[in-house]
Length: 246
Ligand SMILES: NC(=O)c1ccc[n+]([C@@H]2O[C@H](COP(=O)([O-])OP(=O)(O)OC[C@H]3O[C@@H](n4cnc5c(N)ncnc54)[C@H](OP(=O)(O)O)[C@@H]3O)[C@@H](O)[C@H]2O)c1
Image 1 (cartoon, rainbow, N blue to C red):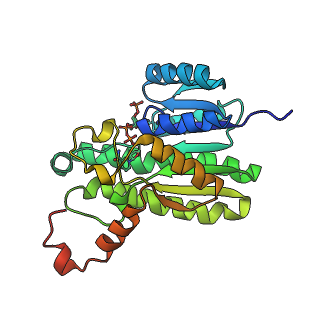
Image 2 (tube, helix red, strand yellow; image 1 turned 120 degrees about the vertical axis):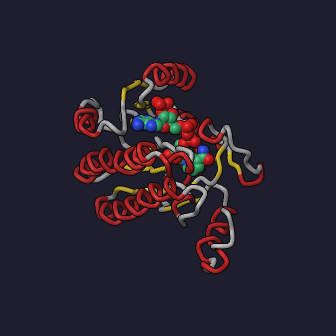
């Protein structure tokens, strides 16, 4: 009898991460749920474990604590078959323009933290000649815009990183998926007034991720309309773009 595979979820308290963890549990995966708030991880691990009858383990993980990452991964007794990187931090753009600490927290979490842990995981998957890596990036990285270019630039860097990682790992039978969710109704966006038609639910993101990994896709926009919207935004000439306030 083959053992059930494990999925490692980083930033596991994110609403999208919880929905994705449930989707994988439904498919029989055991789960490592890792994030800063261990108590919350433990609660979700117990709940999902009971509901889906899979093994779960809650772990402390801080994306900004780079030095801890090698030891964190070495500590996983059974190495995972896949990883979903969901952690992210979005500070208010105006506040981050004034306070570099906020900009740095976004850079350190969304980009540096992601590179730090994924390089460790990628080397393991490369050696094992199997695995999948899912990175939750953002359409905000497709073009820098005045309303959120600091957060957006961290996601642009993350998307470029994932593209390069995919290129490196393709010959090792490891797939890398970049997820651009568009707007999603989560605690990160709870204070924003999002248009319903453009906003996905965490469960839609989870289903889209599961299907895209199965189909070995490279990049997905969760709601297809976002691919068109971003195509237009990316190609707007500056003389038009600079008149907008987006
Ligand atoms: N919501 C959207 O509209 C949207 C759109 C595009 C992309 N995204 C991206 O999607 C991902 C998931 O976002 P979400 O909307 O589900 O957000 P969320 O519910 O606010 O969750 C974000 C999670 O990131 C974790 N996190 C933050 N800093 C961390 C750190 N230093 N180390 C470890 N974990 C950390 C937090 O964990 P703790 O609870 O443990 O502190 C939090 O639970 C993020 O990367 C976000 O940038 C979101």
